[in-house]
Image 1 (spheres, rainbow, N blue to C red):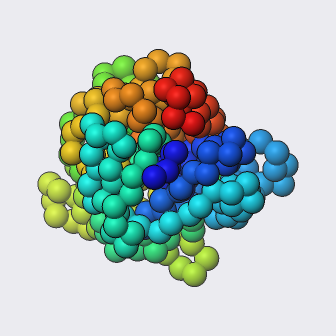
Image 2: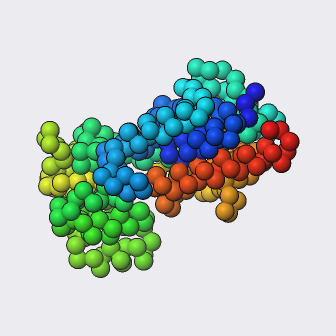
Length: 309
C-alpha cells in the first residue's frame, strides 16, 4: 500500500516526486516507455530558468530524476494497463509489476505529438524536425522553415516562427484548413509566410548535418517537388495520454483531463493531474514542473485532511 503513486516521468511527474519525497510520503513513480517525456526529444533547452548556457533535454530530466531519488522516491518501470479509480485504495494493473495499491494518484502521463508518419521524420527529430516552435524556433534565426498543419496551432506556430526565420512556408494537404478564420487571417497578413496548400508531405530529406528539404506531392497535378528548408515543424496536434483511464475521469472534447481551476484536482477525490495531460495551452517544461508541485501539495493536503497520512 502506497501513500501516492505518480504516473509519468516528465517535468511534471518528477517535480511532484521531488516534493512528495521531501514530505516523507515515499512516492512510487511509474515510468512508461518514454522516460523523461517529450523533453527527451529536445536537444537543447534554453528557456528553463537557472541554466544560463542552456541544458540538454535528456540531461535536465536525468538531473530531476536523481534529485527525486536522493530524497527517497522509488522508481519502477512498467506500463499501466488498467486502473480502478473508484475503489479505495485505488488499484492499478501494471505490466511488469502487477497490482499496485495507492491512497492517492497523480497522473502526469503527458501528451504525445502527432506525427505525419513519413520517412526521415522521426530520424531527424532534434536535427531540424521539431514539434515545438517555442522550444526550438530560436535555433532557426535567419533560416527557411516549413510548418506542416492546417489548424490553429499551425497558424500560431507559423506566426511565432516569423520572429526568427527569414521565410516560413505553411504546407497543408488540403485547400481548406481547420484553423479559425481569425488565425488564418493573421497568418495570411504576415508577409513572411508563404503557402503550399493541397500538398501531401512524402519524405523529409536530410544529410548527416540535418534537414535539407521536404518532398511533397501536389494533389491536383500529382507532381512531386522538394521544398528546400532548414527546419520542419510538425504542427498537426497532440494526443493526451489518457486512454488507459477508460473514461473514468472528466475530460474535454479532445481528451485532456479537466482539473478544478487553480488546483490539480480531477473529478475524483484523491486523483490529481499535472503537466501536458491537462494542459493543451502552454505545454512548456516550466509550466509542467509548476503544476507538478501543485499536484504534490494537493495530494499531501488530501492525505492529511482525510487522516490517512
